[in-house]
Image (cartoon, rainbow, N blue to C red):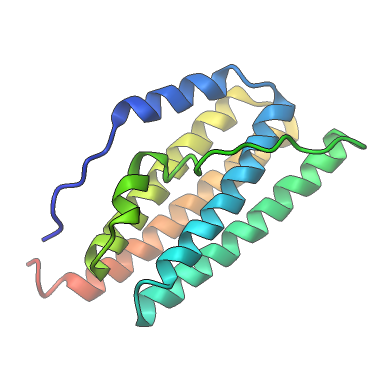
Length: 167
């Protein structure tokens, strides 16, 4: 069974407060950074596990890069001639589990952290959708659905890999 993971709920609340205070330009800039950093996180995790899970992490990294591209296209349409702000921050959905991810040792723990990350990401994008409007809200809605699908894929992989160990 996966050992208990220390997750700082205050960090999630701080991020939500930060997001409520950003305008559309800043939100999309942060979302671009979020997806690019998330891709790097999944690539890092893929290098620490093997087999099907490594393949899944590489797939998730590729998806994150695709999402960053979609957000950049919307950004360019909404803010022509402007460049996105650069944020030096971990991805929204891995922020509460970053410390644990850096210590990941086993496949089961890596997969559990990825599940948690996708669930947090889904919830944060849902909140971003509610505080946005127009095309930005639609994009965050699509990202919410993608996160949910990623979560379900990972959950299926987790159940398949560990169901015999956890009846």
